Image 1 (cartoon, rainbow, N blue to C red):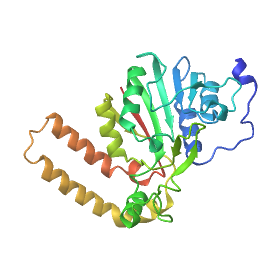
Image 2 (tube, helix red, strand yellow):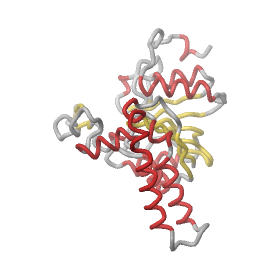
Image 3 (cartoon, helix red, strand yellow):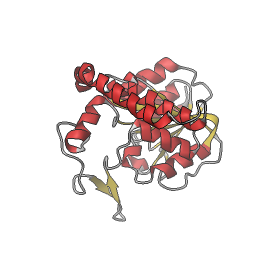
Image 4 (tube, rainbow, N blue to C red):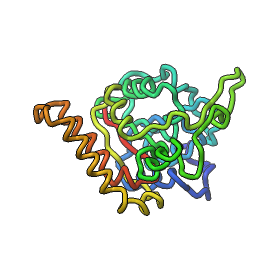
Length: 262
């Protein structure tokens, strides 16, 4: 057994929330042996440890390395700056519950695309902005949840560095459509949505709201593509947007969990 796996700081810890969904997905997927994975903003290191147990070679990076519970502390990296990683040197990148904190999301995606090998995969998890519940929350108060007001300039600040730099909460929530578009601008070729646990509110509302979403989405698609040449890049892009918008994986998943492929 590798030295970094001899001590398990997470022994007895029960995964909950999005971590539980990620743990199930990674375990069921398999094929991690020999993969070079970068865990960006690894936090306490739980995902790094889990993937190492599955046979992957994982290098963790963190803005505040002392947060990590692993015996081998992560390397320092600020995901809003140039990453200290060589071009095309990584098979997989994990960016878990991070992108909603970043004011310059495009730059981070461009940096990740740079370090990934051709055909490499970026896993992103973020609070869903595209589920039925989230769409209704935005309609009511432009907020993340129906039970709360939006993040403000006061409760949006989660902490400060010794230099006085502020760390913000979910001020830059992003939906699947925008992730897909920003990913392509950054150099990624396609997106894949993974199913997570169902959101109870979304399930309760799906029968009522899904037909409306479907018909209005179809109308918008028709208005945009009716004069486009079928088979053109623009036509295919608009069709992809429509499919994402009506996807039940997108609308019912409690958490947004996607792959971007280089």
